[in-house]
Length: 387
Length: 245
Image 1 (cartoon, rainbow over the protein chains, first blue to last red):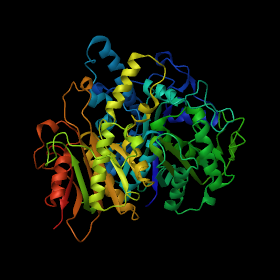
Image 2: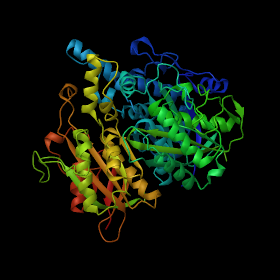
Image 3: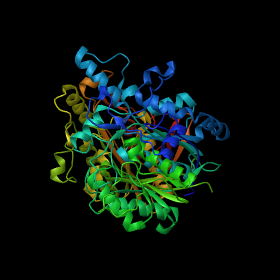
Image 4: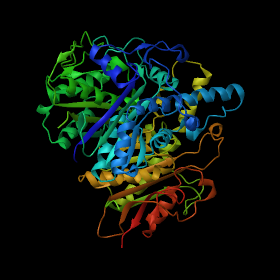
C-alpha cells in the first residue's frame, strides 16, 4: 500500500488547547498532569484539559457533549485544509475515521444520575445524539460537509492508532482520496473508576519505565490528522501493523507475542528492516506488567534504539492515545530532538531499553509508535518525515 | 463503481422470528471456553453464535481470518450496570470484569481468544450505516491484504436496557457474513456507492428500530445468492452490493 501523507494535524490535551501549545510543552518537558478535578472526586493524577471547552454551535446543540466539544476544538485548526481537499477531490471522496473509547459516556453518567434523582432523563439527553460513539461523525459532517465513508473505530486504547490502518486501506482501495482521522476521548467516572477497579490507577503522576512506576493516569483530548494519497505535509504514515494477542482481555501476552507481531507486520508492510528504525514511541502506560513486557519485546527487536514514553505528559488518553503519540513521534522526527521521558527517572534496570532522561538531539528518519489495548488489540505505526 | 468485488462464503442471522429462527432459539457458544461463557454478555454470546455458524458454513480457517465487529451501542447492558454502580456510589472502584467487558471490542476480543486468532480484528460503529461500513471495512481488507482469504463481518445489537430505551424499543439481533475475494464458482457482488439505495424487503416491526437491522435484508439477499442489496436503511445515498452477472 502506498504511504499516506499527513498534510495537517492538530492536538488538544492536558498540555494545551491547541497544537502549538502542546508541542511547546513537549519541547520544554512540561507535563500537563494535575490532581483530579473535584467533580470527578478521585485521588488520582489526570490529564484534564487546562481550559474550558467552548460549546458547539446552536445548530448542533443536541450533540453538544464534552467529547464533541473537544473534537470541534481540534477540528477548528484543520478546517482550511479539509475545505481545500473537499474542493479538490469532492466531499464524497473525503472519509472520516475516528477513534474513541468513551464516546459521550461522560454525559450519560450525568443524565443517568439526573434520572435517578428526578425520575427522568434531562430533555436534552439522547442515546443516539449524546451517548453513541458515532455522534462525533455527525458533528464532523455538519461542520464540514464531508460525506465520504465515515465510521468510528473503538478498540479501546488502540482505537486512534488503528484508524490509520483503516484510513490507509480506504485510500489504498480507492474509496477515498483523503481521510480525516485520529481520536478523541473525554475524562469520565466510568474509565477512572474502572481502571481503579483493575488496581491500575496511580494517585501520582505516572512513571513509565521507571522502577518507581505505580500505574496509569487517565487523560483526555484529541489528536486529529488529515491524511491523503498525495500532497505535501510534515510527515507520512508508511505502514500500520495490527495483531491480536489471543491471550487475555486485559493482560498482555507474557512474552509480548502480539506486540512483537504488530511491530513485525509494520516493518514488513513498510518494507523496512528493524535496523532502519531510529526510535520507538512505546505504549508505556506505567503499569508494572505492561512496561516490562513491551520493553523486553522492543529490546529483542531493536536493541538499544531510543525508546520514548510520553504518557507522563498527557496521561493515558485511551481512545485518543495512539494518534497523539504518532504525532509526538513525528514531532521528534521534525525537530531532530527526542523529548525527555517525564517520570521515567530512575529507570527500571530490569527493562532493557534505552530511555532518554533528558531532551536530546537525535536524527530520526523513521519511527514506530505502539498502542496496545483491552481485548489483546495491538497496533504499531511506522512514521516518517516528509519525502 | 469501486472495482471492489467480493463473494460470500458463509452467513448467519440470529433474529428470532425471522427467516425460520425460532423464538427463544438457543445460542451455540461452544466456541467459548466454559469459564469464559459465564463472563460474557448476551451481546457477545450472540456474536459468537453467528460467527461460529457463518465460519463453519464458509469452511474458513478461524485462526486466519480477519474479524470486523460492528454495533451501535455495543456492550450497553454491561455499561448500564456500571452506570448503576457509579450512581449508587458504594465504592470508588467498579467491577473489573464488567469494566473490561464494557469496551466496544469485547466480542472480537473474546473471539480472538477462543479461536487463537492473531489476525487483524477491529470494532466499528457508524449509526444506521454500521452494517454498510462493516462491509466496506471487510472489502478494503480483502482488497489490500492479499494474504487474507476471508474476512468475517459480525454485527450485533442488543435491546437497550428499559431505563435507556425512552426513545423506543427493539429486539436484539446478530448476523455474520464471511466474505472472500470474488470467486468464479459462485455469485459475486461489487461494492458501490449510489445516490439512491432502494431498500428491498421488509424488516419485521420489532426489529425496525434496531440500527443493525439492515443485516436482515443483507442476509436474505446474500443467502439467496441473488439481487442487488442496499446496505443502508431507507432509500437515500449510501452503499450497495450490486450482483454481477
